[in-house]
Image 1 (cartoon, rainbow, N blue to C red):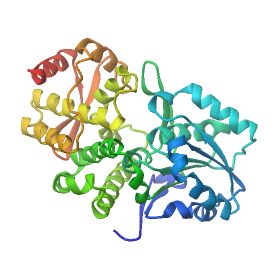
Image 2: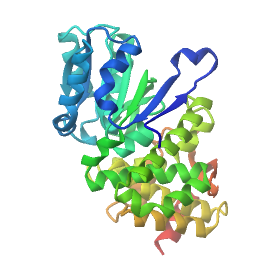
Image 3: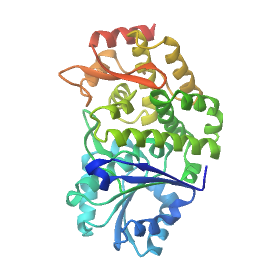
Length: 369
């Protein structure tokens, strides 16, 4: 990979002024201040939203970069974990920004993984009716998926990401070197999202992942850089075609309908998002096979790869079928009472289809037998 890779997220048409660039560069964390000045965001102050773990590792470097560019950061810490992704924590962030009198031209910077990115983005979208937003993702999952595309929000007691907004960042700065401190479980969870991109869009990328699984787990620089580059390129292209998920972008939800239900039913404490997604992808692949849309061999191919990455692939016994289906009915993709799934036809080709409760139960019964 070149020393710097830029990927355009081109929203096109009347939205061209909201298009932005993903920059992938080793060591870019130390250049964020000058990059903000280049964007016209060297306004004097900004907010950095992070958590104690990430802040302890990288906040000093980011702060030094900002201050060298004449930008004074206001640091806001959010506790670690998906269980804190709620409106109560968002309100606490508002309180801090208002107390500091952060102005409309002052950017909000997310320094962290998917939870921090989602929450900081929602704050940026709603504070003073919108302030500039910058993503600095520090986990593999955030680097390959959640930092790109403008989905922001928080969870509700009844489901994941039920409260939120589409709000695009002004820039995404991805520093692959930050993955060196990522714990193994978080790395594996991120690889679940990498697999998803291959499954839904590009069979050759899926084959690359299979061929380089050990290298990715070992954080081989070339293998990881390729995974980030390909995943961001795929997602940027999809988001550019369908920013607000009215059509094509829905394919990025493959595995998420089941996965989000599993997260909600385990109170966001048992599984990382990528782990629940892994289970959800296998369940969606099994459902695709049960409906005659895809070959059973494809479901087993996906499961084999996820197992190689050390990810869970089966619905936990603690969740009953009745509980699962009741939670599925709260999914954002439900229309006229029908549950809509992204299902497989083949590797790299998916379809959106309404599925009946009877078909879901039959698939779950077959998979368990």
